[in-house]
Image 1 (cartoon, rainbow, N blue to C red):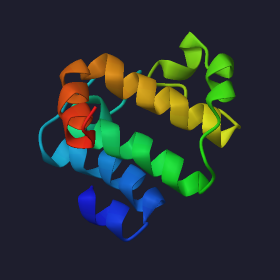
Image 2: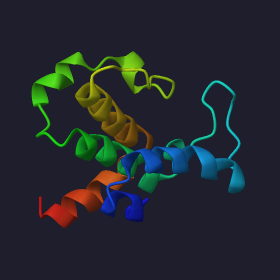
Image 3: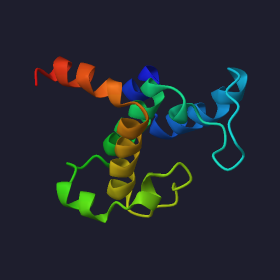
Image 4: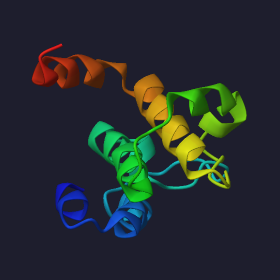
Length: 110
């Protein structure tokens, strides 16, 4: 995931999250599918970061008002607005892996 982010291969990162899950034995329900971003914190946060970086604009905090619960659930990938999708993916990462927030804040000096 790190190399995909560094090389700005954001779509490749999403593909890796889906393709590598069965190879590493992650078996999930059919409704959710097999994705590493729902199993591993680094992929969850990397997918969200890739969505923000792909948009290449400064994230608009006002778009948080447009994120609904249905956007955050794992099957909600058909969101048309890229910024709403990026916010939803970050919220999903924080909800699934809340212990990842403290190291990120410590690294930022917050």
